[in-house]
Length: 249
Image 1 (cartoon, one colour):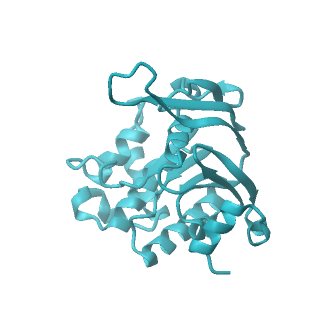
Image 2 (image 1 turned 90 degrees about the horizontal axis):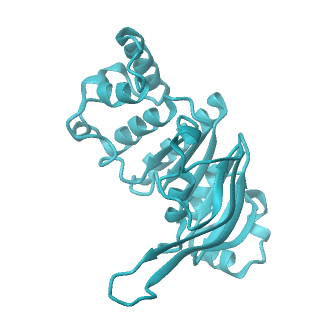
């Protein structure tokens, strides 16, 4: 189980003032069970992406803990191959001078001991799993459409068989029709690979399509938490405001 317990995070602001810390996350606690999809929904500046970096172990909380099966995720050995990520800026997450084959191989062959033939076979299988053919192996990122590049990024995320995948605004820059295709792909992969997703987004409409449970994030803290099926009955004022802005039942 992935757990966040009483987490807080601040950053130093520019300037010469002595007390110039800006607190972004305030005493946040949450749990993420296996085989579930949890949406973290918040507007720009709410702190949801900072929370995502803490979950990934990219950054360490100032207080509290983020643990996977009781072990701290900021220590690489405990999170490696257990938590993967797919980000909004899929182009910058793919090395511009590496082919798709190389991008996949460098993740799969982290030990340097996997035979090249096995890597090739697995790479083709991964591409097929995300809806791409083996002809994409020789392509570079600039040769891919946005949807294709995000499919490659998803293939990289699943190739180490993680338990959790964190998706940070992973479809927000795609066209609406492509968004739906990627969401359907994520649903298929969740079922076929028994994955758990943490889906960070500003779009409550998209979250309801994919997620079982929703965490509404505001001002660096959890405003409310509810099952997706109960969203239309919520009495939380901020959640109602988001619904009125974005959602049509």
